[in-house]
Length: 382
Image (cartoon, rainbow, N blue to C red; front, side, top):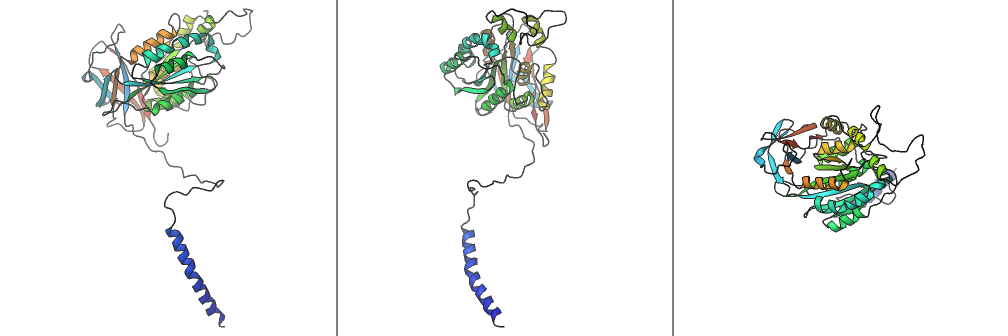
């Protein structure tokens, strides 16, 4: 009958050091995260609900031409009016061709355009000098079955020219959309103009066919991110038909199914030529299609990919049909980039989720204005 009190006393004596040791350990416990042991299972953090992102800055390149197509470079900030979903916005940054450029040159290296590769190599000097400009920086990305970063951002024009001049055709794939996604990601990290800093305009220049083969990325998703990252896309459309015409003579024995001579079917009752393919290349209300594409990013969109990308971001698409050479098209893009207006604003009174329509107007008659049509602001369920 005397054992229970003795046991209680013993446990009491032992509990004292244990409690003291526990308190000491807790006092020395790290306040930050603990690095797990090698091989240990790491528990993921619970998923967070998506929130509406507020766009801090919207930059849009604006090209203004007269009725004859000549660039107008005599306007001032007071001549422009910008609205976001119909609400007037205050222009916080205004520039005419002076902001330095951050450019990604995206070049297809598919075997399908192999006959055009000498033209692309030759255009390297125009891309480096005319498009980059004296204060610009550029990176070079090539794509076929894979996407390869061939030159990181550099201000060295010779390095860019050498990289493009040494390109050669490889496999027959064309992961255009994947390459565009990588280009947008690269540009997203470059400094951009703000009210108190000059920054750089973000530009992607694509030399490619208008078709994609094998990409995991959807075009709409690329365009949505390009708009949010203020990336303007310019493109030089390469024609597989023109490449076929320039290729060395081949066996002309009739075949039941010529491999890829033309990218589209001809008009009924007509013979396919580069000119007729050019007519098929355009068409439709591209502004409306571009807006639809960024709102429905899960849908597969393939037609007019280069034209849509340019329209959605305020750039320009030039198809190299007939006598319009690659070098001339690149020179035309360079001339526009260094003669266009750049407007920025911080959205005010319009931060709701969904598609935001941008309209840029000039307070002078008889002028044609081209700018990006808008951007998509994702909501909780997007």
